[in-house]
Amino acid sequence: MALDKLDIAMLEDVGTGANQLVKLDGSAKLPALDGSNLTNLNTAELTGGFPAADASAFTNLTAENLNGTIPDAVFPTILPARNAQALTDINAANISGTLPATINLAGVGSAITALTAGNIVGNMPSIDGNALTNLNADNLGTGILPDARFPTILPARDGSQLTGVLASLIGDGSLLTLLNGNAIATGTVDSARLDTGVAAGNVIMVESNPGGGPDTLPAIDGSQLTGVPALLVGDGSGLTLLNSAQLTGTCAGIDGAAITNIDGGNITTPLAAVDGSALTNLTATNLSGSIPLSNLVVKQVLSHTKVDEFETASDTFVDVDDMEISVTTTQVNSRIVIFGHLALSATSNYSWGGWHVRLTRGGTVLKVGTDTSGGGNDEQGVIGGLTRSDPIHATHPAPFQEVDEPGVASGTTLVYKVQLAATHMFTGGLCRVHVNKSATPNSSVSGVGVSTITVMEVAA
Image (tube, rainbow, N blue to C red; front, top):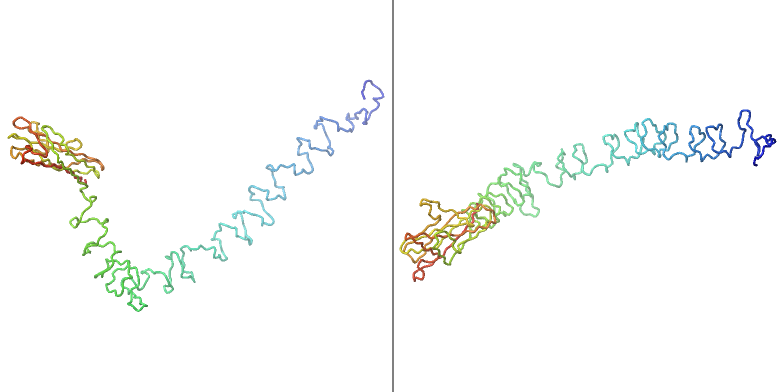
């Protein structure tokens, strides 16, 4: 009710009931009241115990003041680092990390897995070792290894203590000793292991022919035979790899198809047609037939013949028409031999006349004479010639020959030409030089000629 005026009677209505005034006690404290509607209380001013209440909205509680049991849901999924030495009944499935060496596991160990053998002391009880790996065979003391544990092929070992071994051993038996030869039924025994047989000085045993024919020697490898006397009898068709250096006497007619490394000094009759591509150091004087050009020093020969006429009155060198030839080298640094002749005549008018001839390669003059004793006016030609009045109806051969060393690579094309110059006559005029015709043509007795040029490629 609203308090709008002071009523003395109201001040006397004191108590803790409804619509009563609350009176402090002798200690200036509130009497016991229902504080459910109180808000904004300062917990620091509260004393005593809280009655049972819903604390879901409490925050910043101090764990030291809690008692009772904390529910599981309040714990974090992963506990923080704490001293767990007082914890009991921990589920090992929830333990990760490394256990310290001071932990003693008690109880049944059948569920313990992934133990490190280095941490196991004492004797292990009888267990199933099917899943054990990397076992050390040096630690086996008793028991028998099953057959499946042995490798298919035993390593090299001393078998002197083995008994009951079957003769079907395979592999390298080089370390086996004290084998009994009487127990060998199949296979081939090296001749060095035999007391009799194919070794020098031993007896060759002859097989008996079950068909009633002549006895025969067995097929044996004679590559190791030395010093065998020529007293062998019987059919030797089965012998192979005989060393001919140890044979004496004369061999009967045999098929030499498989004979190799024959000393030519021991061949007395002509050889049949064979492939001689691998023969070396042949003597040329013993060859007959034709040798292919690929095996000759002379690699190729080319020639050209000029049949038409040419003439000149020039006292300096000019190319003779149609007297040139080209050659393409077949190997590096080939030498080229050039030779041939010109059929020449010259007008003389009852005085002296003549010519000079020289060769060029690609426009470069080849070797020429260099005598300049006449004051330097001599033509530098390799061939000189002259004519007189008689005979005036014939051509005169003017030969030429040179060896050229161009020093070029294989596949290089070289062009050689013949050049001609007329000489001065003593009468002061120039003579005219004719090629392939006489100086007095149209005479019933005049003659014509031909001129040639030939080149040979010679291997360097």
